[in-house]
Image 1: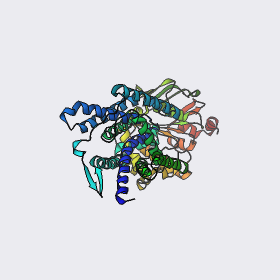
Image 2: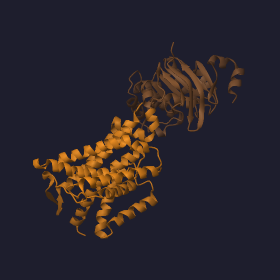
Image 3: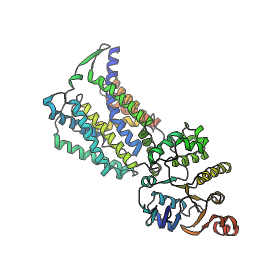
Image 4: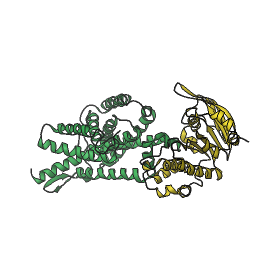
Length: 292
Length: 235
């Protein structure tokens, strides 16, 4: 195995990883604070992708509308998140996991059908913004600029999230809500509003990642379910609700997948599932999680 | 004179198990009032009903003339009622200082209580300010929960079983600190089963039994009449 091949696989894995991190961090955040596993998180991601495509169609004549489209998609999905949380999701807090599963899965089906209804079942695609459509040579390999952008933006958002949670007033409130919701409420904090805010932020991240993935992957029905399974594996590996767990879980997932394909072609997802099974047996609460 | 807090004939239940049967009480500004009684007579339930953590099935909670029955706890807190729960409930993964700043941020009420002021009342907490609060001793956590609630600058402090499970020496210093709060003019509604602790602090007592008030009067009455005390609180 040559050095440049290893590097190439490594970068490919890292790109996958940082995408997954953007998506899984929202999933993990909602679970960590509200104790609800939102299976519809992947649907928010899918809607982000479709909405970005739609917005690009609207602004295309002017060209260079990709960034605008991405922001539009993220904000629109965030707003949808606000509606979903205010009118539906809040009835799930403290409920049995079975209700959460059934409810959020129903949302997956509804949003999936809505997307098919609005955008059809064909493949759609968006081209990379002109600024990032080229590639560069690194260590004898060709790296698309867009992948490098994703590899940078992932850790940037990770750092931002970590900083916000640990060094801002709002972040401390979120952590306190995670530890004892009722107590925080009795101290005067409107925990309902904090929850809405967290959910909107999580939906925003999902919508943003959906929009950002469009230059790399085509937009198809079923991308919602595919991504939620992957994001779920990531948070199981890293530890539900753990911020750095999600980060390292994504990196491990991306790299195992990338090198797994190289070593056992045809068994690509197999290696990831084996990894998840081993971690579930040895550390059921994940690498960075806490025993429940 | 209207009371600061008026509880009027409240009935409260946890699901099907009914706990309070028509509790009425009044707390006037500057007073320290104690709910006395054994475990399970409804002291905590009364406090939780005032705080909005439990909605009474009937009756009213009146704060400075406004009916606050059914208000969400955060609205009650922002109106000026500070709640110190039993069994402490510090935010275990936050440091002592973070517990205090979260509370100040949550209540958004300014006043004399700042981190410096609470550290003056509880110097021990200043030493421990960067320690993760889950690692503090029971007594230190109790001080922290009181300090944390003070950060919201309440006009009335609801203190639920502050002496529960603490060593006698720790209880003594706590008594001194709560006494200091009282001297400074803070209104306190205390729930206690420790007769000595409550009689040392309270101006008036309500003795609870099976979810109803059995006796009410100045605490001096109970302090001076051992026979009455034994009759009401035979433990």
